[in-house]
Image 1 (cartoon, rainbow, N blue to C red):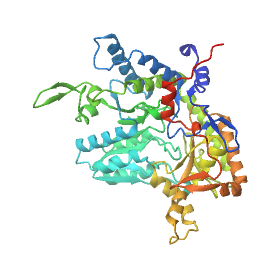
Image 2: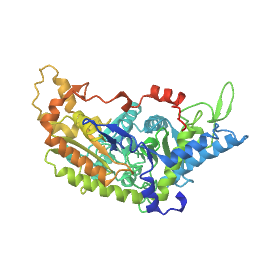
Image 3: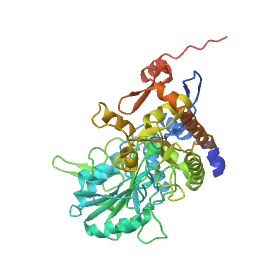
Image 4: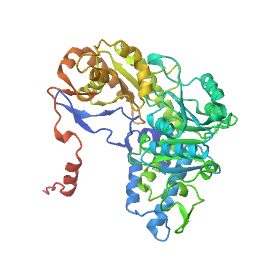
Length: 497
C-alpha cells in the first residue's frame, strides 16, 4: 500500500500515523482533550508503520552474528538492511563511507569519536566547536583534546546565532595544522539555526582537519548529503545523529564516517562480534566494517525501527518535508513576533535558515511557568530550560538577566535567577500542523491576557518548576509502569452478551 502511494499521499498518510499523537490529558477547567506535542527537538514520537515492522521482526527474533537458522539469518540480514538505510538516507557512497550504531543517541558517538581522533593524531591538539553546540558535542572534545576553542556566532543578545564563515576562516588560519577537527552542529537545538556544513568541510580540509557534524537536530528536518559535488573537497568526514530524534524512540545513535578513517583507528570498544580471532595473549580485530565498531549484541529492534523510518522518509522526500516545515516556521515566527509580550531568540528565518525549533519567553512569566501553564490550560507540550546548551542560552539571555531587579543578598535570590535563566521551546515534527501553530499562538495570547490570575494560582517547585495551587491531575492521567504492568498481567474481562 505504502509503496503504491506517491510522495504527497504518503506524507499526508504518515503525518497522522504516530503513536501517542492524540493522547488525552486533563485540563484545569475539568475538561480533557488530545495533546499538541511541540517537543520534538527533545525526542520525537514513534512512527506507527516503523513500529509495526519492529513488531513483526519480534515474531522472528534472534541475535545476529549467525546465519545457520532461519531467525538468525533474518536478524543478521535485517540489521545489515538498517545500516544500508542509514547510508542511503544521507547520500553516502558505500565505496567511501560506513555506518555503525552505538549507544542510545548521539552522545555515545561523540564520546567515541573524540577519543579515537585524539588518539589518532595527538600532535593536532586543537578542536574547534561553535558556541551553540549541545553539551554532547562539546564536553567530549573538552575531555579528549588538548585545547577546545569555541567559535563565536553572529549577532548579539536575543538574535545571537549562526556561524560567520569569515570568522571561522580566521580561526582556521590562526590554529592551522594544530586543528584535529571541527565539531559543528548541523542545526541548533535552541534556535534551529542551520549551519553551512559543506563550506565548513572545505575550511577544515584546507588545513588537513576533519569535519564532524552533529546532525541530531537536522536529520528529521532537512535533506542531508555526505557529499556536495558542486564544491571541491567538501565531503563530510563524520556525521552523528540520534535515532530518537527521527521518529524511532528506543533506537540507537548512528555514526557515518569515511571507511578509510575508521579503519585507521583502533576500535573504541572491545567484546564479542568485533574480532576475527582471540588468543590468550592477543586478539585480532575484524577488518570488516561496521563489525569492528559494534562490540556486543546490538540493539537490533531499534536499528530495524530506525531503518524503516528512514526508508519511509526517503520515499516521501526530505525536500517535501522541508517545504512543509518552512511554511510552519514562517507562520509561527510571524504570529509570535506580533505579540508584544513575547521575546523570540535566534536569527529570524528571513535572516538565517532554521529548522522547526523556536525558543521564546513571555514577559512576566518564568520559562517554567510558561511550560506549566501551556500544559495545564491548553494541553500544549513544550520544553523549558537551557536545553543542554547552557553557554548559548546564557549569551542570548544576558540583556534580560542583567535587567533583573533582584537583590543578590536576598534569601532565595539564586533560585529566583535560576528560574529566569532559561526559555520555553516549541519544536516541530512531521506530524505538526498549522492548527498546532495557531493553537500555540492563541494559548500564549490567553496567558498574557490572564497573567495576574495565573501568577496568583501557581507556586514555584524545585529549581524551575511550577505547580498549580488547586489543580492536581488524577494519577491515572500520567503513565505509570507499575499500573501498566498490572493491566497487562490482569486484562479486564470482556462481558459477552
